[in-house]
Length: 262
Image: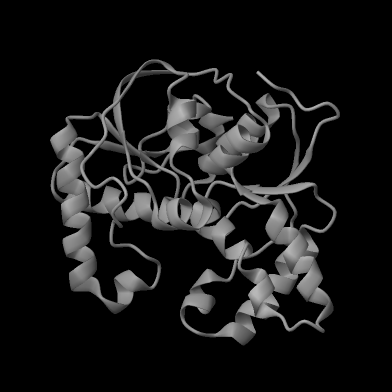
């Protein structure tokens, strides 16, 4: 176990989906960062990362959103979030500004300080003491943005390997898109549905109890499909398992009282 000395000051990038649909992911992220010895703060003025407008071609609106995020996280040593997709967007901020724009340099600096949570814990902090217990087997979905933009692949598996009684069963095509893709699932619903059908089938074939991933958009998409198909597989964000916060219903199940998680 490696604790920071002095502790790193980390700004938590919560993400829209976590804020609106699964706040326990944010609390689990804070818990892990604090276990690793970090001081964690949550800037009140943070908003969406701007990815929906960026993917829709609205660079002007995305630049305004980026300015707000840059201002909100100014002064933090690191910006960490439970989403490869959103952190990947933060790393693309520099291309939104011209060379003579004062936000250009600030965007470049922010991009070098932004990390997905499992990558930050392993690659930056060399943190390996996970205090958790999870009975049963899991299979893991590699989200497109986390894998291809940030190189997140072995990091979550390395951390999960520290948990007693947890068995990882790799699915076929774990690296293949689940069909969510932000606005992709809206523009191409039939293709998206076929892709998530393939993903749910591959997850079922492993016989795993739980499907994990690092992006809530992907997890909501897969949980919805699995539920409609009558599957018994639970869907959770990887940080919920790593932080030992699995008392709540799985993603896609009944709502719950967040107070039970705190």
